Image (tube, rainbow, N blue to C red; front, side):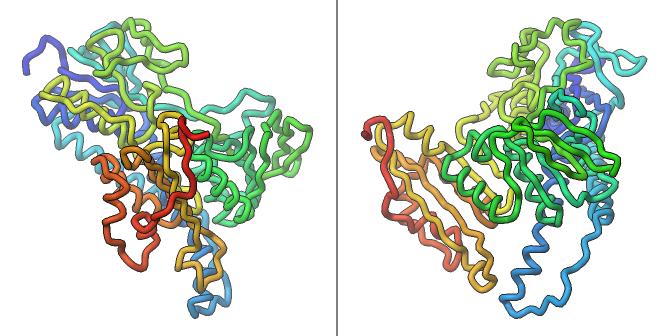
Length: 460
C-alpha cells in the first residue's frame, strides 16, 4: 500500500483488540504500528482473565483435597499454601505470554512503539519525543479499575494490584457485587482468607438471570463468605496494627488486612489528548463509534473496552477483525452482540448465553422455562454440598432456544458448545432428539422435558 503517511494504520493500545487489528491489517499488506506503554496483551493477559483463571485454579485445590477423603484418600494434613510461589509462577507465565505477543506482532511485520501515545492532530500521534503520522488511527486503550472517592481511599487496592501482593491476607474485604468482585471473593476464600463481600445491592451479579443470582449468592454464603448486602464503604482508616478499619453506611465497622475494590471500570482515555484530534466522547466517558467503529472523525476508529459496549476479550478480538477487514479487506462480518456467551469464574463456575428469563418474558408472549437443580455425581461420595443449576429459556410459539444458563463445574466449557447451537438457531426439539453423554452433568440439557413454568407478555 502507498501512503504519504508513516503508517497505514497506527494502533494505540496492544491489548486483545489492538493486537488482533494490527496483525490482521499487516497480513493484508498494510504498514502498521502499535503503541503500548505498559504491557503487551492488555488487561486480559496481564491483570485480567489469564492470571485470574490461574488463581481460580489454585483456590480450588483445598476443596479437591477435602473431597478426596470420600473417594478413599487419607488426608493426614492439608498441604501448606505458598502465596509467593503462586504469585511468582503466575508472573513467569504472564511474561512468557508477553513474549509470545511480541513475537506475533514482529512476525506479522508490525512496528512496536514503546511509550504513551497522544494525539498531536487528527493524523499524528506523539510517542515520547517522536511523532508518527497515519492514514488511519485505532484507539484500543481499554479500561481501568475505578476506586470510589472516600476518606482513606488510598488504602484500597484494585484487581490490578491483587496479582502482585507482597503477602497473602488473613482477612480481606471485597467491595462490589459484579463478576470481578464475586470471582475474587471466591479466590481469597478458597485460598484460606476470611472473606467479606460488601455490596450495595442484593443478590450479587446484577444483570444476569435471577435464578442464577440467587443460586450463586446462596453458594457464596454456604462457602463461608460473609455477605454484607445493601452496604457501602464510607471511609477507611489504617490502624496501628497495620490492619484497616472500614466504616459502612450503617455505622458498622469491619477490620481486614486488605480491601479490594471491584465496583467498575472506566474507559482509559486520560492522556490521549483526543480533543486535538477532534474526537468527541460520549457523556458517559467512553469513545462513541458507529457500526464500523468509526469515531466522529471518520479515519479514527475505536474498539474494545474504551467504547463502552461489551467488555469481553473475545468481543474485542471480533471488533479488531472487523476493523482490519473494513479498512484493508472486503466484506467485514458484523459483530453479533445479541448472543455472546460469557462465564463468571466464581465457585461454582457460571456460564450463560442468550436471554435471561426476565428479558425473554418481556420480549415474547409465552416463554417456557426449564430448570434443573441437582447434586452432581462428583459431589455424592465426597459429601460436598455444592449443587448444579441448569436452565433453558424457550420461545413457546417457535420452540427456539432463547437462553441457556448453567452454574456448576466446567460450566464455561459446557456452555461454549451450546452457544454454537443457540447461535445456529437450535430449537427445543433439537435438544430433545440429541442423545446425552452418560453419566455427565451436561446431559441434563438434553433430558429436560417438562417446563418448570411459563412466563411472558401474554401470561397472567
